[in-house]
Every structure is written in structure tokens, then in C-alpha cells.
Image (cartoon, rainbow, N blue to C red; front, side):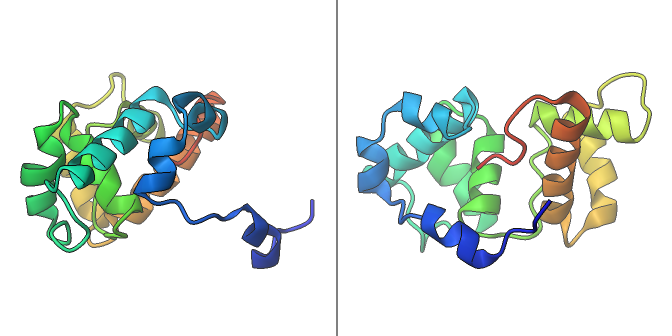
Length: 154
């Protein structure tokens, strides 16, 4: 199999801003590989941005984003953590509330039961300050093991 270069991917990249998102149907986002929870997260970010509850400048602080922006919507804290990881590029975020991540941790460590969020976060401490990289690896591992999901949460 031929390795892809940046030039291969360049035509696939588009500027995706709030206006583009507001015009994009959920069915199109799903066709691009996003799950319903990921689409809901995008919609929550769109809403929080439109109402002024979150902005790129105010979202730089992880705690502020969790408390202020996305918590106002009905989404779980994992939504804010995925936003921090993928939209703001924070390298040390591990969305332990994500079921796929917890299931991947269960499988990777040969645990009998899926760990709860607290146990998953305890294990993730070992990967600090690069827990975001670990999360991406576990999402890829989950997809590889189960054949389900879109891999990374967009």
C-alpha cells in the first residue's frame, strides 16, 4: 500500500467554520464518519460560540472550557474534552468519559470489566503530559480491535 503524502490530503481539507457547520446537515456529517455524539458535540460548540458562551480566546483554559462553555449545553464533560483535544490542540487531555476509550483500555490491559472514569483517569496519569496522544492511540486501537466506529473523533 502506498503511503499518503500531505499533497494527497490537501484537496480533502476545507475551512470549516461556524457558518459552514450551520449550513451542513447532520446526515452529511454522519456520512463523513462522525457519530451522533460527535455531531451533538459539534452542534453544542456551534451553539456555545453563537451565544458567546465560548470563544477560541476564552477557551484556551481547559478548566474554563469545561465549566463555562460546553457544560451549559446538555453534553457531558467529554464533549468539552474532545473539543479541547481536537479543536484547540491541547496535548494533555484524556476524555475518560468516552466509552470507546474505556473499552479500549479494558481490552489493552486485559481487564475483566470496563473501567469507570476514575480508574481510567488513574491509568491515564502515567501518560501525562501526552494523554491526548494516548487517547488518539486508544481510539485507533478500539477501531482496529472492534472494527466499529470512525476511529478518531473527528
